[in-house]
Length: 137
Image (tube, rainbow, N blue to C red):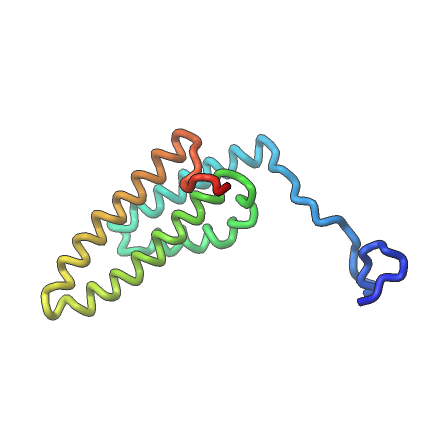
């Protein structure tokens, strides 16, 4: 839309014109995100005991709270957890489908080890307040 006044206004009467500034999270918000990220790793770790229910709860929370984590080191943990979940789903479906020819059992076994590795690595990095991915130059 045209903006004859140069104010960034869209001209729509219900639009509030605020600058696109991302506010840095407060110390309290950072603590809450850290605690939540620990809880999410615990939910992912418990998925074996709950038939996957806790992983479904965790992935929903990951997506709901992802914007709150944006710009923090916790965003990389959310991305790590989300990728772990979806790749686990893909490989689990493949493993189950191939279980009739027995190769699926090997896929599922490797998937279990890989998932455990991802949970442990992520939780250790979180404990050390390190992001999961190196900053790109």
